[in-house]
Length: 193
Image 1: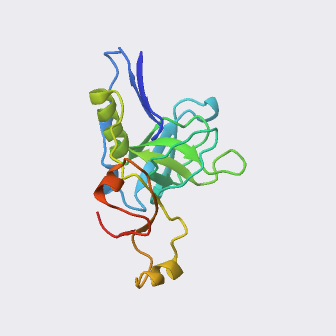
Image 2: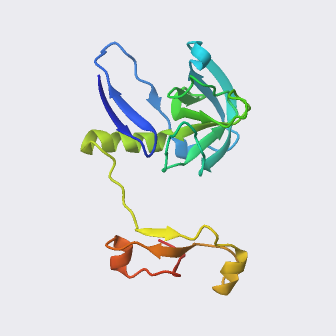
Image 3: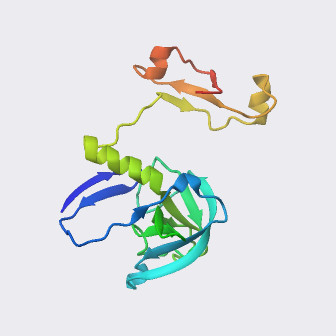
């Protein structure tokens, strides 16, 4: 078995020599809407071949603390109320047509079990990562080279003559980066790219 992994997205690809396996069919996670029914599959608590049903509760969830020292920086999770418990991680999230739309990865829980908030990696992101791993052995990412102001609020936006918070304020520009070379400076507002 060969393994390629990308820790920034918590996605790994295993190359397995098993010609009789049937592959799941790709879905399109970009075409999911809040309220779409999904099934979460896996082996929670060691109970193999379990399936739970729920809906897509939210898309684009970010800034999640996944615990266990996992530093997943590229977050764009699907949120579902389909029961995802310890042991479901890595299992597919499928739509009602049986197409894989996500990879179950985490729960938000105070007690360690399902409380109706589970997270899955969108399959389009996983597919991009897999393609990059196969082609380059790692994921090639573009970067700007700035730190953005996480305190940019309505009051700060007014100081920049904005009617509301939009865009991002540059708090720091790192040396020898594309942002530095392009002339981006501290206090610049990035409104479009």
